[in-house]
Image (cartoon, rainbow, N blue to C red; front, side, top):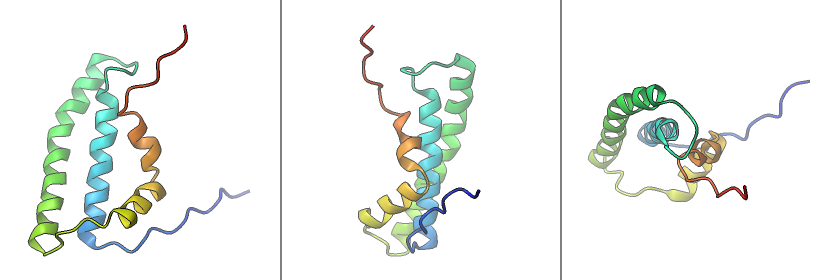
Length: 102
């Protein structure tokens, strides 16, 4: 049995696609660094080191959009793309978990 097919990505400019990809890269790394989650310091250190490069790529994607005259972020379209790319799960690790009742 095949897994259910994902909904199609909305139409994005190349720069918008790059923005979404770099944003999710940064979110993934921040999730690995989040001190509210279990993990070891070495994993967090490696993620923090990689974050510098990914944040630069994210800045470059936004700069390119601005230079091309893409001065507005079309939030509903970009949010739909984030959902298709599992952005809700990927960004959830950046937040602080709810307190446990123990």
